[in-house]
Image (cartoon, rainbow, N blue to C red; front, side):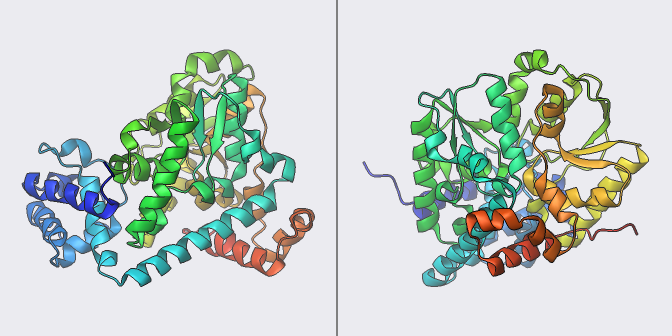
Amino acid sequence: MDAMPLDQALQSRVADILDNCTACGACADICPMPGPAGIDTTDPQALTAGILTVLRGGEHADAERWAAVCSGSGHCIPTCKHGVDPRFMMTMARLAKPARRDPADRRKGGFAGFGKMSVGVRVLSRLQLPPDLLARFRPEAEEAEPEVVFYTGCNLMKTPHIALLCLDIMDALAVRYRVVGGPSHCCGVLQFRAGDLTTAGRVAQRTIDRLTAAAPRAVAWCPTCQIQLGQIVGPDLGGDKLDLGAFVTYLAERLDDLRPLMTRPVNKRVGLHEHPGVGGIAEAARAILEAIPGLEFVDLEQPRVGYMCSSMGGLPDFKRDMHLAQLEAAEAAGVSTLAGIYHACHRDLCAHERDWPFEVVNFLELLGESMGLDRPDAFKRLKMMQDVDAILTAAAPLIETYKLDLDEARGVVLAEMLVDQPLPLGRR
């Protein structure tokens, strides 16, 4: 029997939500986003009822605004006592508006978003990695009989030193793995957000099939991909066959195997930049950091919002203020190091190292330091130059090696290294 088309399957799940949700308001009450969005939260039941109105095809200004700024924190999921996944409910409410557009416009929007992402990944990875290192992420480098498949997603390759550390750590653990990822194995989220469910379903189905065929277990780096494939479209595309976990929690599960490899003390005072959207990630990263000899972990006690910094893009002022509060808390705590978990967060925060009295790294860099693994952060080095000509000059040998189009490279650097800076550099 053929699988139901994705749009029909999603609407079937929406119908279940409409049957089961009582608009009790628990999800609205715990959500961190309505307040910063300027939404009246005095009646959370009415706000949740507004989401149901949107799902039925109606209009509700506050509910539509709430859905638009949802950052996927996931606090709402365990609060629901009626069998509803509120994060999925919000995803479908957010989809209601693009779903009303002409199908051709939806396809065009999805194609444009995917194309922009693909160019950014291709150019930024080649501005940082020589061909021999980039080849580690190609099919010919795959393990023949892997234990796990490491799913990079797409945007991780904009900060490829993090991706290389993932592979180095698995090599040190003697894990047999296969790498799957990049734009050719996308999760389909960009087409999905544009409302092009036909293409989104086809892209996600191909990736799910590839992951399930590659190894008994898959571990994903990117929380966007994990939520999209595991919770949003996966249940309707054979995702029940996909054992997709998070790479960070996978490492925490292997902590006893990692400990003997942490032979070098890392004498640093470290704070962690956290997001709660994928359960257990922040706790796993903290457990790994606390196991590193010599490292002193400091809880910065900051609000935990979203599943990655990019998920707060709907409220840029709120995101900026969150970043400033994080930097100020790190300084007040006297840390030597602010460690992030995800790639998008690193792109946002790393260049602030220039202006604050601590380094900004990905937490895997600290684990790698203890294990004797070193992957220089070329993205941070280039971004801290804050000058497009200086960046292109520094990357000139790789630009020549890959025969990159100079105008295209300039555009990517401007857009994704210099203009894309949520909290402007410099002390206030």
